Image 1 (cartoon, rainbow, N blue to C red):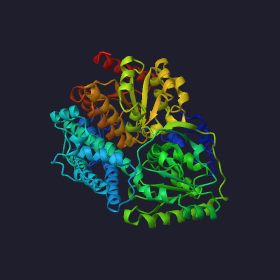
Image 2: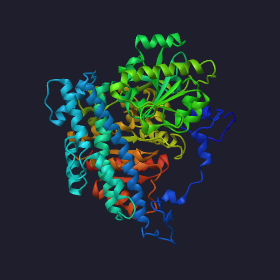
Image 3: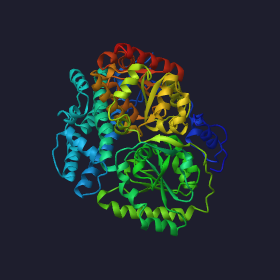
Image 4: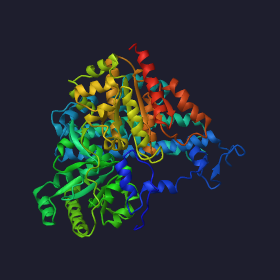
Length: 627
């Protein structure tokens, strides 16, 4: 790792970060893009099957069927369904743990920071209780009961959470899901060897998984988090590598399960913990946000100003954050925790602790979070991190980037805080859309990858193109980390917007890009869209609203995309999923889906051309609404 890896790094929309990574004497994912640039053509098309010992079989014009007889359509959609099921399973794992933590907190009469959110959920579920703890326990039980239903029994909360016109259409299509965990199980079974070979049937299951992913893994996880962790509040906050303060013991958190950190967040600022830190030579402890759990903490940063320094960056910024030398420990509990951080942590003596075995890193200590033992575990974690701090500080050279990012990104945006900012109603936003001051809304969501132009390149450039056309952008996911570090979520970014949107932003003092936080917050965007549609008396596909997961990365993103399609929304991707070898899959997702749900998949790697397509769709929707 003493080798100078030089300039063989991928491009980044964040030029200071790109220069910093290029200068590092250690390898990162940004370097490995070059060594992995030769891709398997069969894998890209999804036409490779390795489900049995007769394989792997690869479909070609001269060999159009595998040994078992499966053709390209079967193999591709089978692989696709398997990915969607895996992605959905990840989200269901998160909401299950969140509901369990809420239930256990209620039973132990712990702090509930978001009583307004609790009452909102109780109203939706039809739960009437005066005692907040009893109410919270019943809310958690309602979610868990639905998760654990068998696949053949329809989930109850879908109709209570989802938009009624969408539910009606889902019933017509026969895609109302059963128990969310059982849907994942059935999806995995269905795409195993010599079982389902009907591509349309498997794609239909992808929509069912998308619905359960969205309702439970996205929307309900957010609302349950609000109850435990507090509702988001608008505020300016620092972002980027500048948030790393070397005077503190810095803990980088990665993952998606914010409720796992509840006890730790409070204990780190306790007099006892601060005293321990000071005795070790630091001022205290600070949490440094990374990936989606960092975005969620930033979203609620108003509740945690003492312990949270700010959000430093997304998944593919994590290696650079560690390479500064200013991080003393990594606490991980889910993805997107890259395996590439392992050698960097070893080199820089950074303590790694995994709190959920699904995210166990090879050279990390596993300390599975147990609610009943949380206080003792917190003490153990604090002591281990202090020991790491003592061992490494003074022996590791700091390589900080204090000017990186900015100090006034607008954070804390949610369906609740934004609506409150607008005066408690969506009417001001609707009026701006009707008048044309805001042409439409684009949700730029999901992951960051390194291959769609480079690190955050397509996401940032597309966002710039959209706002220049008076289209306001709402973000959620790792893409938010890159967009905010490039300054597009500061009020000053209004100058990059089209003249009408710029005037709106300058009058309201807001940026043209609003960050809703983690990928889980895609569920918040759905709430905004649903409430606007309800106020207008239309279905979601009629709204001047488009989605882009320009730099989608993984299986969770594919499940997210299926949710977007089930909602009837146009979905842009910078890179195609691995389906291009199946004419049936391509046709269903890009053409037939318009008639089924109202949605469609759009593939385009160019920011300007993609913006042209999305703008045209928005204009067509406006015409349909006679505005």
